[in-house]
Image 1 (cartoon, rainbow, N blue to C red):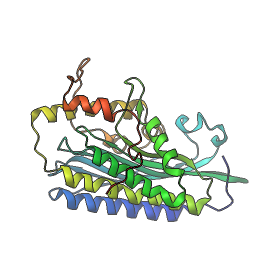
Image 2 (image 1 turned 45 degrees about the vertical axis):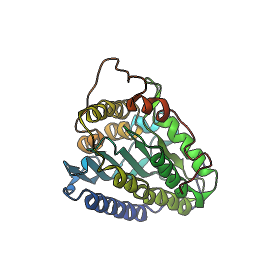
Image 3 (image 1 turned 120 degrees about the horizontal axis):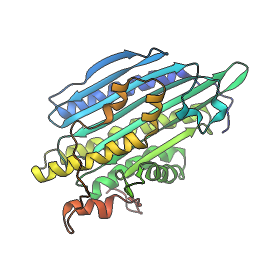
Image 4 (image 1 turned 180 degrees about the vertical axis):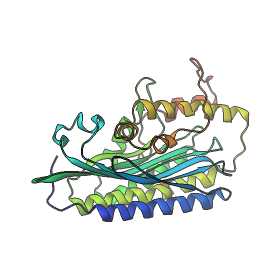
Length: 312
């Protein structure tokens, strides 16, 4: 990994992340119309802390968490150093906003976003830093126009940084949010990037902000289109079953979950991404020709959602 000469500005990144958390929470509260985020400020014994915000039992959102954290310490956990031995013996700082929104209505997808900055320093050596993050969408009863809108907005976030950026990070998202033991993606993907520092600090920071700012632009129109659709016990039951896949991914594969737990992060904040209600069934398969089967057949394998066709 290259180490660009421009000095990273942690305070500037932190200000942006706190403002992003405020803006996202305000927008989601307004859309829900019935519930507000409860704020929980916490401190980490080994250094740092965070500001967790959780909304429960709203009119639109069954549960949502939008968390800011800024943790630091003298040494890194195994999740960070296993593939990066050059980080051993360095002090670290990790800042980020992470969110997961679980709606009531099965026609409204679950959404996730995360943007983060990491800095590792050692006396007499150049700092090692990078940005990471992205956003992805997990529908239960999907609509092709929603998938196109989501990916169109993801592409718009990337365009100012080069035509090749969206295809690269879209592919990385498809590969990252993949449940190997199930042979399926978690949803329809979006963007995922990590270890980003090759453009220098100012441009990399600009890109992180673009991704953060485009999340609401991608998600809100889908919520508004689907939140009033009628559903019954069948749709709710399938939603709870599919939420089980979300739990499986977060506990088996998610880097952020592993890093948070191994670094002594706050367990309640780390696991707020899990849905409030979920079901598992033994060896269940959807019946052919059903709306549930359509999810598996069309939406749980990587594909080019834009394919030359943009939103009208």
